[in-house]
Structure formats: C-alpha cells, structure tokens
Length: 190
Image 1 (spheres, helix red, strand yellow):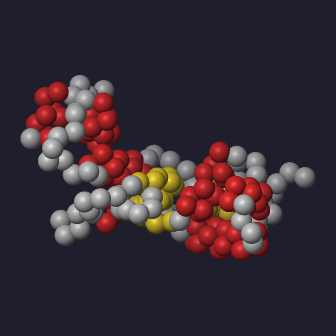
Image 2 (cartoon, rainbow, N blue to C red):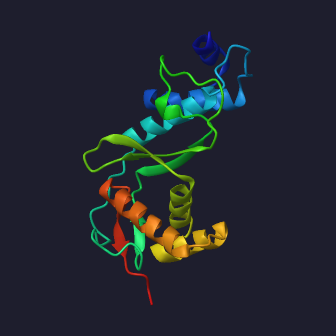
Image 3 (cartoon, rainbow, N blue to C red):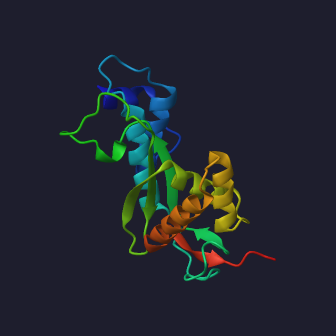
C-alpha cells in the first residue's frame, strides 16, 4: 500500500533509479500523512537507508594528498573524509530488523557515522554525543585544531575535569582515523 501510494501520489524530481530512495524520503516528509499502522521509526529508517545509498554511490573519493596521514590531531586541524556523515536518530535504525522492531524511541539519541572507507565499503559506527559534537565542530569550523574543538566542548559541557574530555576526544579522533573518517591533519597556521 505504501509503495503504491508513493508511485501514484508523489511527483518525482528525477528519473534516476539511484535517486528513488531520496524521492521516497521526500514523499514521506512532504506528501504522505502518517497512518495508524505505521512504524514510529518509518521516516528515520528511510533516512538511514537513503544515507547508506548516498554514501555508496557518491562519486567522490577519499583524497590522498593535502594532509599528513600521521599528523597530530590535537595540535593540527583534523581532516575529515568527504564520505563520512554524522546523523542523529531517536530510534536505533542501524539495528532494526524483522526480529528487532522497536516500539518506542531509545532513551538517548542514537548518533551514527555513515561512511565509505578506502576499500569502498560502506560502514556505520555508533558514536556518543560528545564525538558527534566534535565532528560537527570540525566540519563547521574547518580552521580549528583538534584541541581547540575539544576545549570548546569542555566549555559547552562545563566539564569539571577538562583533561578527561581532551584525552577521550584524542582517543576518539585516533579511532576515527583508523576507520578512514578522519584522514589525518594539517598544521594550523600560527
């Protein structure tokens, strides 16, 4: 019923097969009214599925130059992969299956990075809110060092032990480097 309604009522903006998931998401957001039998996570699951496909077919590649792959992620400016996207969901969309159908939102938002690694494999990584905030700061403020971004988080959290946040953030950046989400670093102009 849902698919029939999509094809009959939604006016697609593109005829390309690989963009149908984006059209379906647009349909859910703008055309279709929620129905009594809908799963509460329908829109979030559609977004997650669209994001996985978008990362998979993105024509960009992970750059090989313009940064030091082993560069210091605290004193330098971490370089993020253009093929990594942070998303936040109310439901654990990455675990939904026939055997796992949540009926209520998770107690805390679920933060995921959907990315494509150097082997062209689409992956996801569940992260915490602080790591999600760190990546958003680095994305929105590309001139800041890793340490500057972490110090901003310390201020935002009013954290009583700043060194704990800095150490945890450094470990998170190294984990993200191993996964090809953080590619390396460039020196911050002095």
